[in-house]
Length: 159
Length: 199
Image 1: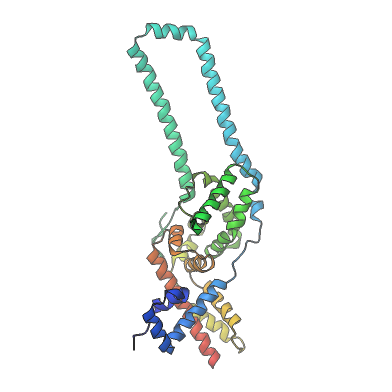
Image 2: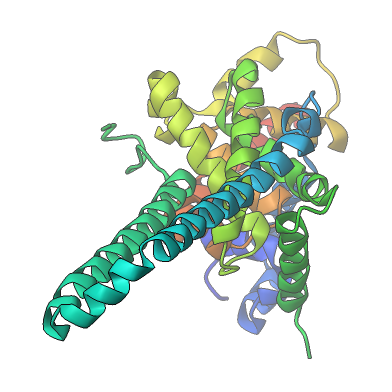
């Protein structure tokens, strides 16, 4: 006669009867002790699956109002658009207003100096933009994944 | 041929797109789809009823804020469960440090013992299957909050071990052994009741 099944096998087979191997099934067919053990775990699994799922006694839709979410979403593009329009307007007016000076500058200033001035300025703007995007993404990631404390079960509570 | 997971992912993508496009009721739909999952976690992890309301609100605000960065690397429900789990842990750590310590504690004391003492005071009665389920339900409530959460995710929400591992950030082997231990404790209770019935 084969040896009895282990606790782990009973638990596994109670949850997934299709996983019972042929060898174990043969043993189960002839061993009433193992049959009883398996039946107990099946009862437990069934009871756990049928346990009532708790429900909130409040309406989540009221707690998280749709209008707030939409306003939050809508507010960002308007600010961005307004800032972009203002920026373009300032640059445009400056270009028109100082066009004479700019033309004079580009004609008189050596090309090398022009690049020396304009390239660092462009690089600075691009760097700032990248930093802003990275910070935003990091902040969002932290807000979602934030885990102040985690740890090995039962031990090491550190903040 | 599309698998169940593919269909789920397409549904998730459609819902997220609708929310990000500002379609009315799309977020309501998301709440309706995941409310039970979030509730089952909060009820297991947060014993103080008053705290659950704030945490539930916090969870869904975080979900809304983070939807844009959600990359569909997991099911939407798994991602929301992960946010709920972490929000609960953070809440316990900040507001209820004692409960936080208890959360990860192993239940060394046998929940069956407490139950048996309670039940012994009651008048004798036959144990039918319905009563047995109630007994197991009661016994489950005496397991550690972590065990309860894992049982709820595994049996009630029918999540896989991989999904639970993603939510809780625990190794699959650890989750398996926690579930094993929890079921063993419940079996002890079952045997005691069966013996009592025979008497």
